[in-house]
Image (cartoon, rainbow, N blue to C red):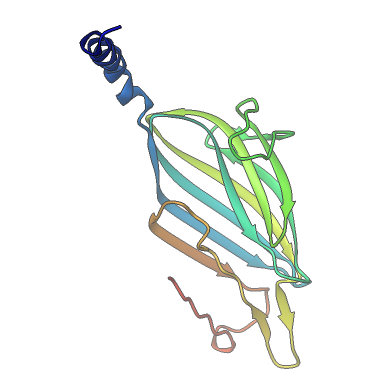
Length: 184
């Protein structure tokens, strides 16, 4: 094949692929996240995260890495979206495929990874993750310390709006409670 003919075939093939490129382009953004934390009298912490994703293109999975330090334990209670709860049994390898409406949980060094499977295409979705943390609240003679990072640095995209709320056990007086927030 001559050089001109080969070049012509290359450009013709490229011209056929160009219309498909926008179909391959996709992105997502986290528009908002709401984190509700309840400190129980036994020292365990119940966390509910509502994370709003803005999808541009077709997506079928998302994940959340929850940091776990030595002495802490995380138990995932539920994952779902605006249509209801998901069922356990989904795969946890990033990029894997499981039916929409399923989720899986995996222990990895320093984290608990939650992977959920959905079917989203050019839309805004809100996902809910509920879990309990044990060993995060440290009790001293005069204070209970809850050192909890509500939004870590393991996200590949940013968040437009983050709101966090903490509820302390009944009986604690408002003037006896100090709360510090340290956003990045």
